[in-house]
Length: 488
Image (cartoon, rainbow, N blue to C red; front, side, top):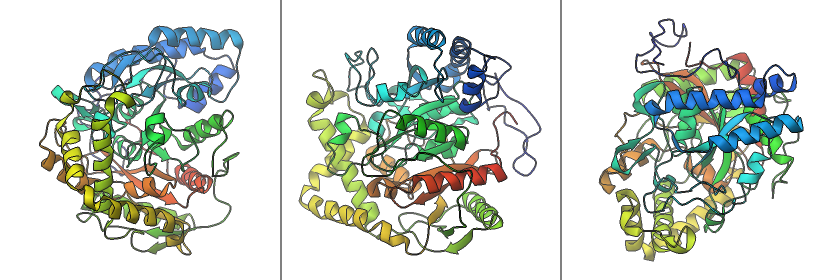
């Protein structure tokens, strides 16, 4: 399973690292994306059962190294595959294997949100999201790993449980959807569920070479615990290896759920109907300057977009100076609520004594800062209200996903002291939380690589509800400049 291929993409990297692992091979899944696999099912070239069995075999081969799958649902996946065959369903993604992130309620599977404080008891019923996800035709084979409650940007749990990056197993796969990203990047699955409350789709996609799209608020329903947040910040979606797979999922999802407050996607063209004004933001006001490797990929991406006819306009991030402080305060409020009402929100057996140091630290910070919390919330609400107008005559913003290269495993260890963890994650994750507060769409595209061969993603964002525009721009870019693959 170890990849020692010596001919990496010519303009990208030296030879692939012996620490690179993937499960791509000439089985039923082959090297295809989800869209191609669904078409092969429709033509009878492969069956859903063959695809699910291949995915199970690949997970069994890759996961002992990656540590990405936390609960398996293989037998039920096999039954669903057989049912799809017998019913001859022809949906856009019918019969394609996938997985849920450990962040939604799925009947018969535990939902622990990556935390030892929540008992691993099978859920008695689905939450609002799971049946809609399955209605797209995808067949989940299990649930994927995340860090405790999704607070951080690396998928590491207490006791040394780590999800590794298939491009280099000494590096993090990002977070909080790092389990899903690792399996899709490694070829064990073609597509997997992910969600995003501060970058949790876009960051794992950026560091594992995937497409990670965060939709506008209202495009998908929330789990109950997320819907009750004072400022809703979580968006549900998928991580994929192609823009067309993301489009296929989002449009299939809309066949069973009408978006609230934003227009439906309906159809997505292969390119925007006009040339766009794109604001280029190289550095975040919320952290250290962007590092040279990330900046080089960002600038090359901007040059390529200009070559496609779009106008690149250097500018600054549309974010107030107080945003970092305000978001961290809100982060703390959510951790305080989690630790205080875990029994009523998650399980009567919720054990606050088993919370990780980062959750405890965030909650303690929030408790001490309660007198100033109204000011932080007010400023976040104001940022949300003013977000669209901050674009001015721009259509899209282009900036890094994170401001430095992918850290090694352990950099954001779940057992780190709170102060160290907070400093490291807030210095790395300086661009993505804004769109969660604003409720706007954003996408990470794997447009380049670092000198050591690891993927680097860039970040495109648009006004609330302008998901189609963003997807059309991403589709145009991918067609002109195909993304690197792990097996190359």
